[in-house]
Length: 123
Length: 355
Image (cartoon, rainbow over all chains, first blue to last red; front, side, top):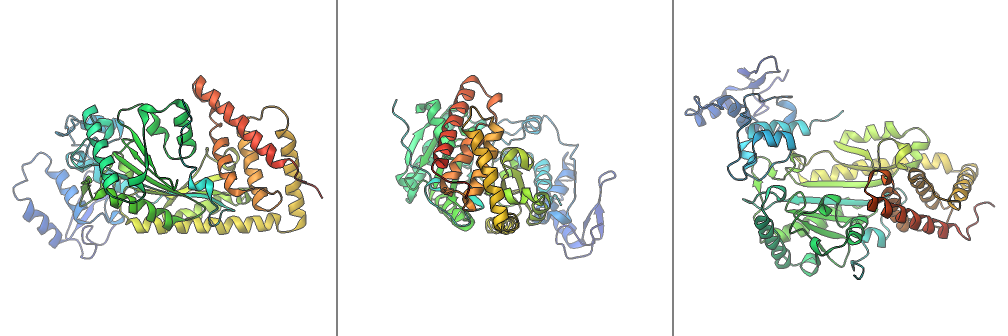
């Protein structure tokens, strides 16, 4: 298990974010406070928990080896669609291509972990 | 219609460093225009708009692309597509029907810009031999010039945004094409390739998996475009390729470093030559023969230009899937196969393989 915060990579974690039986994500107090200060209005948002993940991943500047592995965002709405190119999440999952730059924002919760998994070492 | 007039590509025209083992080095950069659907999702009008913006950007940016020949896919014949693909100016994806597809090719023959392939812009530089830094510099310079007139789709966390996630980030794919026939013969291929993966690169047989079916031609490239700087990708692929070059040379020294080894190679070549002068050779066998002839030329057993040998490889490789294509594709494959056999026969005529 990672010893340090997955965001800064330096400080000891005070909490671990865990989904079901998957490996937990360790976060230190300072990074957790930073996130919460930006998202105090978001707690009732339907995608709040996926936002947690994407935010920490983004703050970690993609330190892939210390972040989670094999995250599967089951709460993504398959009917969710990009307002710019009309690509739905279901289509994106099936075809494997994004339709425009805005897709990266709309499907962020799936795309960021997928990018990290793509770059995991094979050895 | 008159034949397509494009420059002979640099990888076929000039010799390159480490050419005994390395056929060519390629650097490809993918970019998209901000706020515009990627080509596969765009309307005809959007593709037209993208093409016009990129053509204008290439012209205004100066450099080799500003003076490049521009070809519109709608004006090309099947034979033209084949010529462009065999010269590696275009890809099979670009040749699939779709509106407002263009390719720009400067006279130098070392660069091409594809418009409306999988992404709006696909720039590639291909140089002979091992030239990772030079290929990267060439591609990057062209990309920066175009960027002066175009806002690229970019995200501050991810980097450049592309249609396929595998290209997102730097949008860069570096690849080096190597001939590892020696390592295959001493059963060290798998272990050596595995070691080269430590740099985070990926290696695949150019014409299928395993050494037997590919003629021992392998491509080493970066695994992903994300999470690394462009410079890191260039360094890692270059380092992986240099490691493989050294390993291959050691293998060849073990195999052919004495007269006994060279004699074995000549005998093998003589047997292959005998087959070549009979009737049709199966495509897989043709690729193995090309591999053998290239190895023999590199070891000085026959007089052959290794630059020409790069073309043999592509001709032979394009014949491998002959059974799976349409009738027209099969006809073209058979024609290329016949042309290749003529090249190889001409090479062998007048050469003494035995003392």
